[in-house]
Image (cartoon, rainbow, N blue to C red; front, side, top):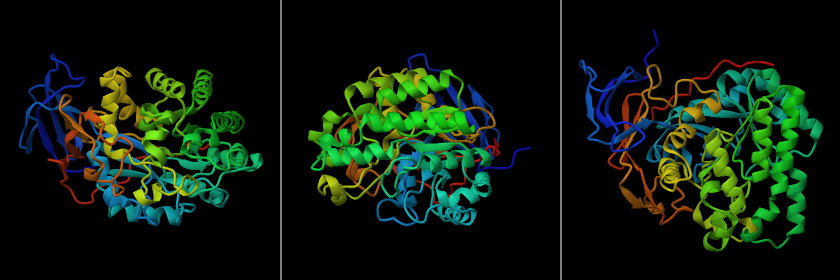
Length: 450
């Protein structure tokens, strides 16, 4: 018998997904925090009732890539604001990357971080261990506590890149021995430095040239070669280029353990938005051309890209408004994940089933996270209720993120979550958080040393 994961709840009269005139009405029975049954006219028993009032029901979303910068830089976000933002976006589970000190380079440091998050998060969470030279001897000890090891091949906010190929091979081999996948920021450090030298007076309009297509493509190529050499498993975070898509697609066709995800910013924006957004567009890897954007949408549709992960990376607006060279990279978006995903359906870029899968079950499977992302018996009782037709404009000042700015300001979106349930508990309702911290570490598959 499965242990309890939370309270029990009977959700009555929700419309099934995808939304259509023919959508049937279903009930969802959650017992001890896990889904017990989904279907029409279920027996309620003695469970407390939540009337869905005709809203459409989907599983809680899984965001496989966020930065809440806590502990260490809570003034930029913190778990209190970040997890509230996740609920606003329909997200009930996140995988978080610590890219500022203290890094998770030992089991002790990782345990301390998990304990810290547990007292603050309103959503379930996984904490990625850092794959750096200092953590190699601790990887096996950290593997049972972390979904994956995060490696920055190219330097980005808070961490430097790796120049030495032999050092990179050592990291890949160590991760394979510890039995956890590598999730990688793939940009080749040498080419990033060349780009910076080539454009010494760059503005954000040239950010995609400073951090070039070639920097990402060559890093992905090198990483795939190391997968073949070491037996490691690789997931490329925030894939941003057509060339990178083609390499990942080829690797998957050849049966290699290579996956990838991208974020909403790469699917909606391009370098041509630099004049409108200024440094708000500055993220790493860079947001590239409309052609790259089209390739990413196609890759999401055909399964080359397994998941949507926001790379939620907030900074105070005053920091983003500094001159280009001094402005930090990153943008917030976890608080808009489902409305932005639904917008891809409304625009005809994705069919409804695929769009949902890429931020629920597909996202969970991309990082081997059991028990999340499906309205099926045995899965955690996480669900989102939304109206697919009701629209409103994005007002960043009203979003939970501490940053209070958005690259999507003023965009009219539909599908804002009206109600979010996390493991049987109502966590978001009427535009506000309804729960205190209660997020738990994600269930993980056992490590698979290779």
